[in-house]
Amino acid sequence: QVQLVESGGGLVQAGGSLRLSCKAPRNIFSVFSASDMAWYRQPPGKERELVASITSDQTTTYSNSVKGRFTISRDNSRKMAYLQMNSLKPEDTAVYYCHQDRRNAGAFWGQGTQVTVSS
Image 1 (cartoon, helix red, strand yellow):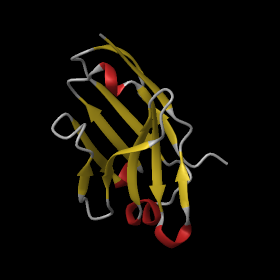
Image 2: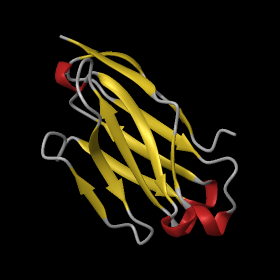
Image 3: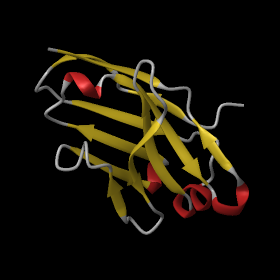
Image 4: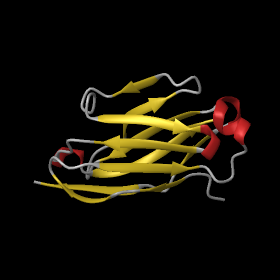
């Protein structure tokens, strides 16, 4: 059963922007609002890495490579998480994955969405 669904990936030129969305259709409001959400990415031939995270109390963290360019947010009423990506660079090219940590109720991954930044 699919727990997380990502969308918003695509092909963009360097310097452009994309907004990724992650929906948790099977969550009830209390489960989603209590969970921590994050975005990871896996560049071609490399390991998956953490890009940004947002806790249930809206505390955010970013990797140094995206700090100042990417913004993570969430809308608990819609059971959605977002990643706004600005000033994109070719090295941002990767498959981006949404991750949900429900604390004691397990962790889940989305299926991934491809982001390709051309130079």
